Image (cartoon, rainbow, N blue to C red):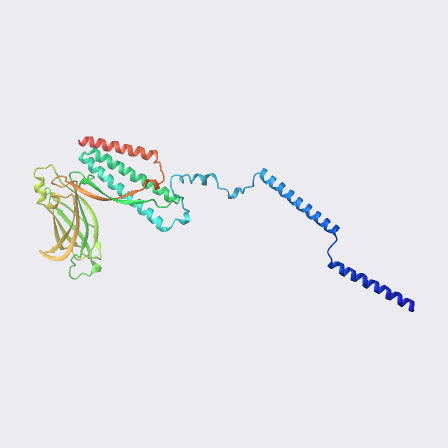
Length: 371
């Protein structure tokens, strides 16, 4: 028994010594051979990483990069941006085209269209007077306005910013005439009535007013008469009707006779089933103003048995040229001028060029016929 106990004690002492040595060795630095092996392994790993990196760089340099075709712009989109080299600034996106920019484009286009219409009118006036130089000048200005309108539309569609512009005062020595009218034509327009008299016993809702006129030319027996349509439920009715009257400029004593004439108006209240139409007022327009003017707009006072009623009738008169002959006058026009460097280049269609050329030839032939 004692021998076996001594053997167990010896074995436990050796095991405890061996464990203590292992614990101490875990805190000691590794031997040099182990360190050399670890350094060789780390060097091999870094060399392998460098080799792999060089191979990947060589592969990426030698092959083309892959491009996603869905994100690449197509040919049509690139063709639509061919105006970038014309404008100095980059085009805006359609979403960034604010309401103010669209409103400015609209105002510029409307202004240019008005200028084009004025140029056409001046062309007719100078063509009628036989002034070829001014006629050609305003023809070119009208074509310039038309081309600028097309350029503005293109710039707005492509999202470009509003071009630069400024206003100028331009003086035109023009003759005030209406070339669209013939020499034997006079236009009378009854615009509206203002506070026309209301007959007694009739409410405002029962009113049905019209205007009847008489122009005693060329004689009292051959007087020219007509009447407007009826307007209901208003003491200030809007008529806006125009009538063509005939005059004869070549007739002997025409000027003296027409200046002594006048146009008589009667305010008619339409009757009912048991009541006839009733004249509630009258007015008279003298024509002496046509001596020096070809366009006149007047408020004619309405009377009832020579007593003013407080109402008025607004009428307009137009003839080709003043009865005393056309007179030159200086007209100052507010002219819109666009900066050509901020507009895209737009080529006019061949059909428009052909039409403009034909119009120019026809207008010049008309000038020659007048001369």
